[in-house]
Structures are given as C-alpha cells and as structure tokens.
Length: 194
Image 1 (spheres, one colour):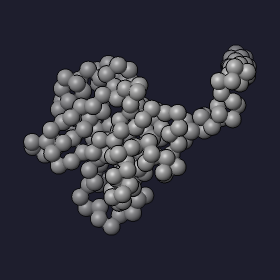
Image 2 (cartoon, rainbow, N blue to C red):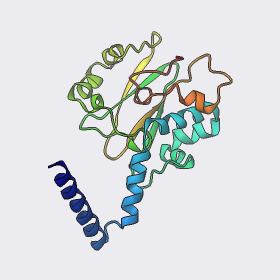
Image 3 (tube, helix red, strand yellow):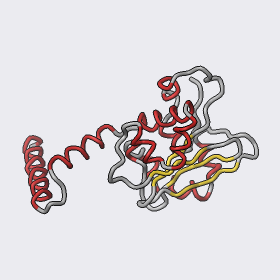
C-alpha cells in the first residue's frame, strides 16, 4: 500500500510540474532550485549571519538595513521570499518575534518554524504576556530591559540579532555560530556559553 501511495504521489508531482511549465508559471529548473533552497534552509544559516554580524561591523550594518541583502551576500538565496527585517537586541531592548495570524517565519534563514511558534498559545501569549513567555524559556533579562514584540507577516519577515555573549572575545565565526539557536533568533532565548 505504501509503495502505491508513493507511486501516486510521484505521478501527481510530475503532473503538477508539467502543468506549471506548460502554463509558464515555473520551469523545471526553477522548481528544482526552489526545492534545493528549501532543503538547505536551517537555523545554521541564520546563526552564520549572526556570528558574522558580531565580527564584522559593516556586515552588521547591512544586516540591520536589509536582512535579505545581507543573507544574499553570504550565499543564502532570498530571491522570491518576503523582505527580511532584523531586530537588534541591545542592553535596553529585547525583541520577541511572533506571527499573530499563522506562522510567517523567515524560512530562508531559519528553516521551518518550530511547532510551538505556530501554536495558538504562543501567538496569543507573546502579545499578552511576553515576559511570561520568556520566563517559561528560562530567559532572564537585566532589570529594566524593555521587551518589544514584533509581528512577522506574510509581507515582511523578522529575525532577531541577539547580543553577543560575554567571554567570546577571540572566537571565530564558526565557534560563535555554534552558540546561536533558532530560539535566540526568534527572541525567546539568548545565546549562552555551553
């Protein structure tokens, strides 16, 4: 039965690809490229951007000005994706990203959204009680830090540029990137030394 379903799925996929090509909506090469881009997308891409921003002030400035352009400059393809905004955490402001309507997420740089990001509970609580959400993740912010909640939409996706952890002077990009998780780039957690 499983083999029959897989065969049916393969035929359906081939028929859809053929129809898209016939209607001049997308060529087979475009579909292949989009699929490859989707397969490569992961939080490691965003972590690489964060680590580069921590090391390179010019890249940091580009990332804050135009996240998609910064991603493209690192070979992370953003063509056809919504614009990418980057929110910088500072000593006084911590950013938290949510999509209040569904699960708009910067997939090009973070991969697929985690299950909890799409949950009604997270979406509602991030707006109503962002400090409570952070507490559930054991995220402790310095007293007086303002929490800014930003809504990711179908038209504009957001990610967080977290603060670089103390004690990482002299670290290279790969080592810094290993500290950064998807949760840090959503804002529910902050990078910490292992």
